Length: 155
Image (cartoon, rainbow, N blue to C red):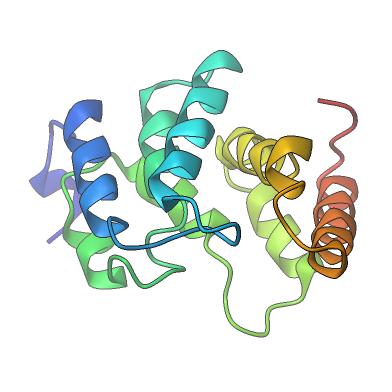
């Protein structure tokens, strides 16, 4: 199936439902429902001026990476080509160097805004406070490095 088979992408409410269902049993590192992170990233994209394609991608940004949905699902889903490209761009590949990941995000129109919202929520001090010190330190450094690779300053 190609993107031309789906001239009208799914409405955002349907994308949200798919994402919530796909991640329903998943928890974040602090034991919170993972769907809270998806909501925060989608809201972050919206408040940063993102369009519907970017908001849809925000809902789905971890779906393939976390094996909540398959590559084939993404390929066949009634989503805009732009949404699919953004989801593919922000999906990390096992063993991929951070520099290659950052380059893919930077060269995919619309992906940087989604990743910026993702990093902002991941690095939220109240979220990190729920983690043990070694994990908090490791993740803080990881997120800061990715922000630097992406040219993101402040928030």
